[in-house]
Image: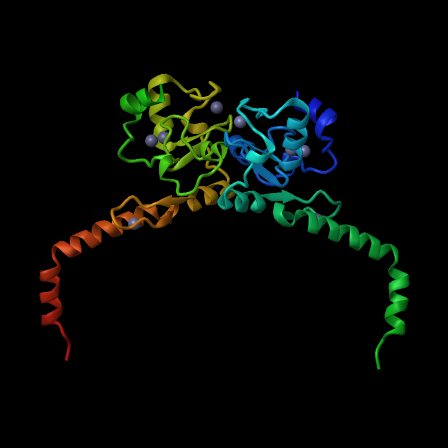
Length: 145
Length: 145
Ligand SMILES: [Zn+2]
Ligand SMILES: [Zn+2]
Ligand SMILES: [Zn+2]
Ligand SMILES: [Zn+2]
Ligand SMILES: [Zn+2]
Ligand SMILES: [Zn+2]
Ligand SMILES: [Zn+2]
Ligand SMILES: [Zn+2]
């Protein structure tokens, strides 16, 4: 059912991170507590419903827009204006989760909170290598003095 | 059912900590991931079964001794020699949970990992106050010089 929601409602498969990226074999219930109950990805910009269940902000907004203001897990009332930010202790644990960088030749363990920046840096490096001769020219011209 | 197990099998109500001691309003699924699936207390010396479920070491040993080597949550095989320590990331999160010290006049937020030491210190202080005149005598006699 959730796969169907991801396909038809949230369209987040390219924006959100898979729980399989988690670099350690953590207890299942612990991983579930960091998982969006709409899309099953790692929580992205999480919000908490009055029932205590958590979702990506974009997921629950799209979900309740289409299917009505109810929690997809427990059916309790869940309107967009009832969503609150989760406790700081929870968020700091979420952002500290160690993910395995999937980029070829890296394999570093990177905390979720800096994972995007880390991956962007790989993109930057790739771009740099592609233009390396150009960059070297720039360095030669600007050798100082 | 769990209350019955605590009464009849684990007898841990005086040894383990209640999840209500948690000082922040954390998401329910997050709290569940730190809860013993036998006794419902905060995990004490946690061990992980092959199915990924977690229990206090003493709880699962007593439970399987009485009811057989099966996980109380999912019924999967769970013999004492199959129990492993949970991942370090999980343990450090567990031991960092902020608890509210229930001692009169304290009300500090104390991390689970040092909660016992904190409470023992209150006991020590109480004892010290009880014997304070005796202690003052000791100080007068040993004023130095
Ligand atoms: Zn998603
Ligand atoms: Zn989501
Ligand atoms: Zn709910
Ligand atoms: Zn990397
Ligand atoms: Zn207990
Ligand atoms: Zn227990
Ligand atoms: Zn189990
Ligand atoms: Zn205290």
